Length: 277
Ligand SMILES: *[C@@H]1O[C@H](CO)[C@@H](O)[C@H](O)[C@H]1NC(C)=O
Ligand SMILES: *[C@@H]1O[C@H](CO)[C@@H](O)[C@H](O)[C@H]1NC(C)=O
Ligand SMILES: *[C@@H]1O[C@H](CO)[C@@H](O)[C@H](O)[C@H]1NC(C)=O
Ligand SMILES: *[C@@H]1O[C@H](CO)[C@@H](O)[C@H](O)[C@H]1NC(C)=O
Ligand SMILES: *[C@@H]1O[C@H](CO)[C@@H](O)[C@H](O)[C@H]1NC(C)=O
Image (cartoon, rainbow, N blue to C red; front, top):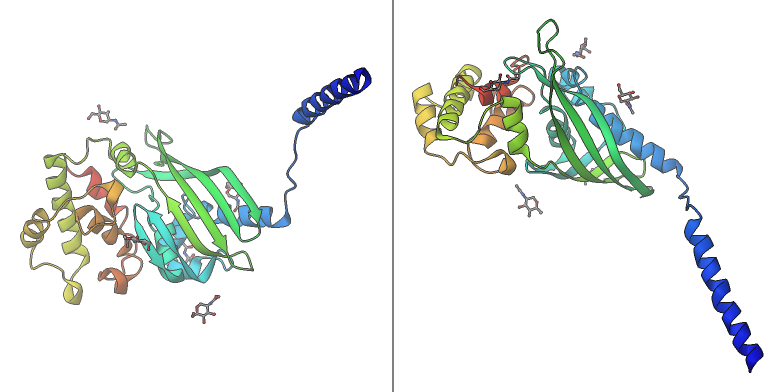
């Protein structure tokens, strides 16, 4: 009896010791080959939003996207921007909206740092990227001034070759990002009126002939003023902020946005955002 009690006691001690030792053994998760492949793909995607690499897409559109990054049927969602189907739509929303160091803000992404990344299965990955946003204006006093950092959290599913087939990405706090870039209090009545004025000016300049949207700037202002303005955290809606994205895309793919092909429009959206006030 006594002997069995002692044995029992030692068994407990031994178990505790094993638990303690195991608890201190650092666990190592082997990195598979697909981990490096998928990280490289996702880093390559984000690198193409960094200035001046993003100018390549603005100049040459989807033909400039290297093979292997997106499947031809790539489909997904970028909250709060929208849902996208197919290669053309997907690459446009990934690459055409990155700020391009244009006046008046000269904002651009200068670094895409992937701060979190997991990919324990070949076709699945999750990432968080920080897009460091600065003034890029060589020669100006504020060249290199840090503005803010845009964050994107994304879940990815790739095809058997490693190209992205499905994605679900989220950009939090687009309102705050917009306000930081504009260095203004946004969504005030004055801001909204000035934004509509600028948007209509750009629309009338870009959309002429068969692409004309409004009879005049005044007509455009009256029409858009009657619409919900919306906000950048809900930019997918049928509102004014949504149109401020469409006019940016006008320079890439005319038959979707209804606007003529237009290269070198500059950062119309940020021009619109900063406005005259
Ligand atoms: C991404 O860009 C950084 C900075 O230019 C570079 O060091 C890195 O090699 C690039 N990575 C990929 C996968 O393109
Ligand atoms: C666009 O493509 C043309 C023709 O291939 C090339 O000469 C030009 O350098 C490209 N533009 C950019 C900005 O890469
Ligand atoms: C894309 O979808 C079409 C139509 O479903 C299909 O025929 C094609 O094989 C798909 N392409 C890839 C690369 O999966
Ligand atoms: C995007 O797709 C989801 C899921 O199908 C749907 O609930 C949502 O309403 C769609 N959003 C837009 C803006 O189309
Ligand atoms: C931002 O706006 C404030 C107030 O209008 C101004 O004082 C400040 O200089 C501006 N900052 C930058 C970096 O433009």
